Image (cartoon, rainbow, N blue to C red; front, side, top):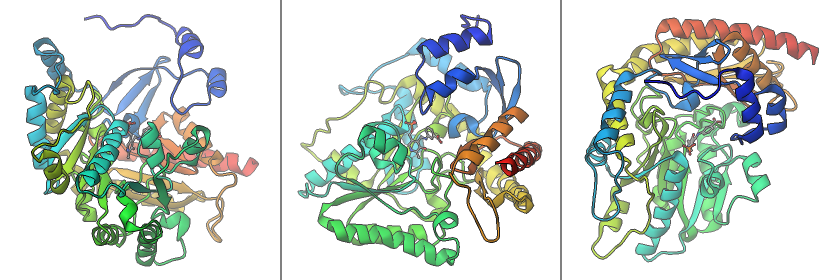
Length: 459
Ligand code: PXG
């Protein structure tokens, strides 16, 4: 079977890309100067660019390729399903076997009480669906004023207008005149950045109290839901103190506010648990799933809906008027089923939990002696290396983001893919990494840190 390849040189691809392709989250003038890196193939934990450079992908594509690249089983399942039934909808009292089967598998995997599934194509549309369900639910309950959704600064919940409004990123809000009315934000449980000198347990309670203060300020009768990533991903891999989530749970219950766990990054083994709601003790009304659901091989998202909302939607006489052409796409669902089978059969969650996750944590800690490293943190296979100008007294780089970007670029030149948020390097490798891959990563990361230190001294 021929690979579809219309051009054959990096320069040709870059020229056309520059001419016609609008990229997500990109300064196009800067990209035009550099030219896009063209990624042409991938296998296991590695990707290759069109110049033949091999890179260790410590970011799993975009937090998603949990089972690694080059999985023939996933390609074969997609191929067979495309031949048998490439598409059918689930609107008009119809369904397809992969969508039905996946609904059962997800209901069994998800924490107790999340037994119904609504499908979309992306984490963004899944969060839009949840915002819709929150409104429909409170309307059905005769409390239509409960509409405000509370989220957190630095949260990432997607790029649609609702997703970006739920998110807490200034640089997404300002240019588009967001957030939309009815979306408000409270402080994140970011101990290193906002509570460094405080006891972590007390700081966790203080961050949770910010939610209760906001509910009281707005009036509980106006607040429909609170949304949070168990561990904030794009905002800098912010791992909350253990006191945070139980307190958030208590506050939501007390004020009758629905709780949404956005597990788009954290789900499907990333933290060494199937879902991060488990170790943090979160009992959500909704869970958002995407990314690791198919390991990124095809687009698919799922909203797991808890009992009280499901009961309201399933009640006689209620028609839920919402859905996407590709809700429950049979090929994506078939790939998700096979992806979950691989994660189970290869015991990837157990491996990250028992072996490679703790090993990564231990090896990350060896970087703490580096003059640039203010903190390393991780849970399972999600982690961060936070850079500082000086350690004692602790001083951050100003303006934030420059040194992180320099370090990320050194990583790329050395053959390592990482992402930087402000001056924090983020890590989210495929779950298939062995200890040897962790060692390879640590070696490259230390080299990049040394090169960055030399550069920062010239600044
Ligand atoms: N929720 C969370 C927690 C996410 O991380 C989304 C929702 C939206 O998913 P879609 O499939 O619509 O992209 C995400 C996505 C980054 C980055 O720069 C992170 C995401 C997407 C793009 C870039 O780290 N996460």
